Image (cartoon, rainbow, N blue to C red; front, side, top):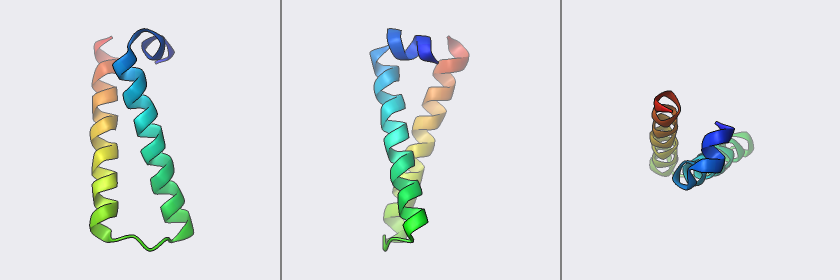
Length: 61
């Protein structure tokens, strides 16, 4: 993963985005912040899409 982060700018950008979204979701869940369920589901869906993309890149490398 570190090699891809260094050699593939798109991979690095998507990995960073994944970690940012994951952190945001975790903070919202821990603080029990008021967020519309639909908005939380969109965040979780986007995180899943990114995770799947990253996984496909890792197994094809």
